Image (cartoon, rainbow, N blue to C red):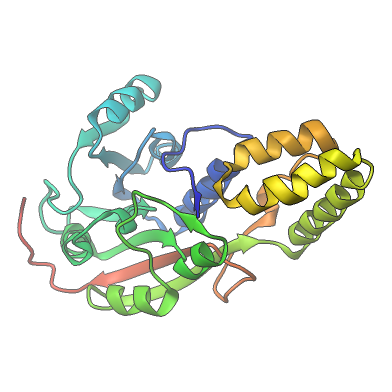
Length: 269
């Protein structure tokens, strides 16, 4: 199984960052003026992005105090960061008009308590945007994240969320057809370049590297391809990272837009 990146830093040339950024940009049009909570804000770039809308008051929370200290130093101007646990939020009922929590729920053992807290602190007219990996995609591509307690398929996530929000709209994130065409061309170019390698090198690739490929980090594979075959893995443009209300080809991430919290009278941590 392939191990994937966990924490994401602000790096414009990083594919994982661009995919994560796309989810923040997707969420923003749903938000209304008022208090906004970013749960598991990590390095804080999402809080900074949301903070550009001066009609919102942004609070970013995370369980990692060291990460929060760095975020506070990097994005100190007018932004608030707080160390807190998503299953015990230190806020009153209905405090927030907007909540965003990207790639969080799959880390939490008690996912139902987490969702209960989201619905408790969300205003009855508010919106919560939540994203999580698609388990089918992870299995198909042999991706294993040791920090994930579980992953969901679409029907499971929808059923779970429907117990805490009366309105749930599900969206799917993947890449455009043009990007998949570019990747196919890249794969073909690799085979063409490999044919020009010395025969001993081709044998090493086919008989040694290929059987062990699943154990090799993608970064090393990509470096080898660049060095030996002079091919660069194609990076999608922002326009080629797509989010749609109908399932896209090989979608990797599920995004839920949740409204009308159920049972707003929860506990106060």
